[in-house]
Amino acid sequence: MPIDGLRHRTVKNVSFIGLSQILMLGASLLTAAVLARLLTLADFGIVSIGMVFISLCTTIYDFGVLSALIQRDTKIEESIGTAITIRWIIASIALVIMVTFSPFLADFYGQPGLAIVLVVLSANLFIQLISFSSLVLLTRGLKFRQLAFCNVAQSLALAGVSITLAYQGFSYWSIIYGSLIGSAVYVLSLRYFENTVVRPSLDKSIAKELLGFGAHLLMVGIMGFVIFNVDQLLVGKILGLAVLGVYYMAVRFGRTLGQQITGVVNTVLFPTMARIKDSTHRLMLGYTQSLRMISIITVPVSVGLAALSPMFVHVVLGDKWSAAAFPIAVLSMQGLLNAVITPAGNVLIAIGKPHYMSVQTTMQAVLLMVGIYPVAVAYGINGVSVLTTMISLGVFIYFLIVFTRVFESGIAEIASPVLPPVASGLVTFVVLMFASSKLDGSWLSLLGLAAAGLGIYIMCLHVVSRGRDVRDFLGLIRASLTRESGQ
Image 1: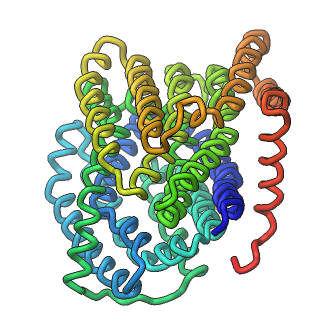
Image 2: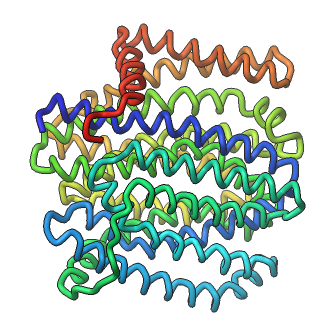
């Protein structure tokens, strides 16, 4: 593919993120705003623990097999069939482990209802198996418009079911059942777009290749699990489930955008990078273009949420969540950092240099596990949010240094795509902080400041980038609304 075509295809695919994230973030905002008034702080604490352990099961269940299938060039159908068999085996083992150990986890956190929650959530592993072949084929075909639609459909289904059941008095079960229905809708959506049936099979040589490739990624995935979840596990034990509920809400909003972009960018960028891994110049071009678009999308939301977090909590969540204001402000910056960090991992895996990621994830996990306990005891969830964000900043700097070697380029050239959005974001942050201190906490004030902040950001971005970033971003939004030929 020519370089200009690569630039257009990669950035266009990443532009789908922005459109899908608007809908997904809106669904998340609506769900949290309603549930925050219907459920207790401890309800959210139980949900947090349940989701964290299911996340661990999902990490092990994946085993890096999806990434291995994306890279394969031969025996695709046989490989998918073997991968399905591997996933059935791992899912079954995970269910047995969850049933066995869930009572002990419930006792550890002092919440008997947690045991059945963990077992019920395990059903998600088997639901996802139904559409695994569809996910692989859509990803290999770079059908990111369809994948974005599936993600949005899942979010909307989860929101609708959770809110309906919460009004009926289902407490934390409203979110649990919403998660299951959301997964089912996601599976049906994938099957709608790609209905090729691949039956389970087992080719020992292919299985060996898939597991060999995935073993290293599994370790990276487990380290990633620790990085993103050890804070919630320890906060729940040290400070209690009610405090964990507050921290969970802060994580949900503070990290939401970064995590959502991370998931979709992994889908978009890894197969693209895998196809051009032999060209350093093209890799750098794809990486920097993706970094630029991610920054343009993420910065205004992150800095806006950070500046308006006290008003946001008061208006959207309610005063009982006031303790979440500071963590939301700090973690929104971490969400931004996580979003711009994501492309680095995709490039390193695609070019066969995952050892840089192993060093990063190991050091990050160690720092978190060593630092969170004393920080949580001394400074509570405010201190934990600052600690995790500072570590993420260190990771971003680390990857910038790594890419000076990979691309044989200077830090300034690699980081330059994010400078216009960041500079524009800083101006927006200062203006919003000042303005919010002068206005009352109402929906009208919040919406007005959000709109004003977006306008300020766009104007600053236009000036700093000399119109390029705004022009390209708006052009990509228009282009993404028009179906590409053959897609």
